[in-house]
Image 1 (tube, one colour):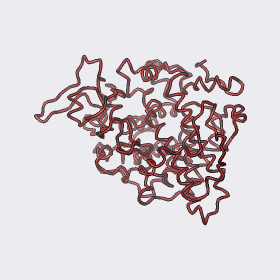
Image 2 (cartoon, rainbow, N blue to C red; image 1 turned 60 degrees about the horizontal axis):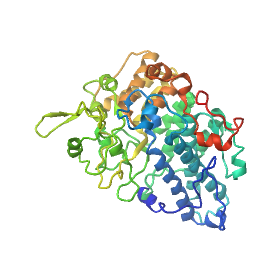
Image 3 (cartoon, rainbow, N blue to C red; image 1 turned 180 degrees about the vertical axis):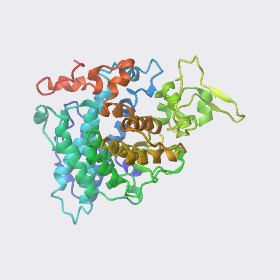
Image 4 (cartoon, helix red, strand yellow; image 1 turned 60 degrees about the vertical axis):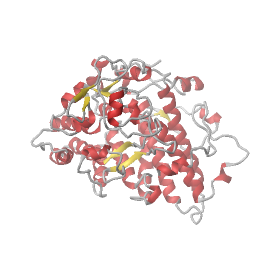
Amino acid sequence: MKKLLFFLTGITLFFVSCKDFIELKPESTVSVEDVYKTDKDFKDAITGAYNTLQSQYLNFWKFGDLPGNDIREDIPNQFENVAIDQFNAHSRLDVITNSWRNYYTMINRANVILSLIESADETVVTNKVRYIGEAKFLRAFAYFDLVRIFGDVPMVTEPVTVEEAYTKGREQVDVIYSQIIIPDLLDAEARLPNSYPGADVGRPTAGAAKALLGKAYLTHHDFVDAASKLMEVTEMGYALLPNYTDLFDYSKDEHHSEYIFDVEYEEGMNEGSNFALQFFPYVVSFMEHFGITSGTPSNSGAPTETLYEAFDPQDIRRSVTVNYGFTDENGVFVPLPSQSVQASKSFTTKYIAPSVIPNDSRANWKVIRYADVLLMLAEALNENGETNQALSYLNRVRDRVHLNAYSGLSQEEVRDRISLERRFELTLEGHRWFDLVRTGKALEVLQPLGMRAHMTVFPLPLSQVQIVNDPNVLPQNPGYD
């Protein structure tokens, strides 16, 4: 899958990025219907949608982690990050504008594919069923992120004209769940294979669709369906890696027993990620020690001291997640410089995958892995009153890192332990902020850091509000006017 993305780098796929409200099919002397004919045509079109996902997930941590309480922005000149970290996010931020555009680009590409593939000859488009599943998975994925970030958003399920786009008002989150996210994922899980051979590894599987659907049910507080769907995932052959640190060893294959769905990146093909530099301190001695030989680190995503202190000292995840220095070859601890304004005060080693070219790392973004599924399942079971069964899945995650099992806890105690375990297991993997919002804890936890009640969603991009210029169609989120 990573290598397939390379071939799409210079191909427009008959889509253009435009400054209009959403990405639209352009006028062309060549009709789209004439272009999409063969199996390869549709495969390339699907791969084009993954390219958009690559761009979006380079900055997804700014939504999933930065507003939470487990990382911070230490560097004052990282203005966008500081704004989000300090709850001063506004509608002109590039990450807001670009994310809106990225998701609607992906939605539009999926819509065009779905509008054309239904009539395609299955003897020619031999993977027709799978391509429909992939397109619906990607469309549901995009809408799931959109409603979690922005709340009510325009619902577009087919290609539209420019004129029609201006009339697409915001649709309620519940409607988007019931009419797109859930049905698309149900259809996708029935169409997608359980695994792929060769170069197609990395495309969404039936397991990925089930896991994302379980997360969608959980986010929508449908705990019964969440538990049922996530339980199905546990019966598909996934397993926790025996060694937690292997998850972040990029000399090894990232498509292992715990992998369910990643956003794929590959070095040496202009398809790499920026994570190695994004989350690393700008200190030469540290770069040399960890093999960061090219580029300038951004110093972002510094784990907090509160998170560090919350860990059990025996938890091996702590040394992967939060670091204040390193131990050199002589056994001497080398701390981060305490007075440096160039470097953050802590860092994670989750994304250290050195590359020859700056911002061209092979490190993927882990969207859903099996530990996440087990913890979501524990949460859903506990909310359904099945607390003892929930503990068994929570304890499987703890057992992997050799921590004592929990027992004899109340539902509320288990609720708190699951939340804590998700912090230890998944920091800087795009979950903490959404966990706090989903569980209704965001304001309680984050108000001391500056959060206000309306900030459970981000502002819509100002450029989109101004283009439509009609608050009856596209009003700004309350509190961001």
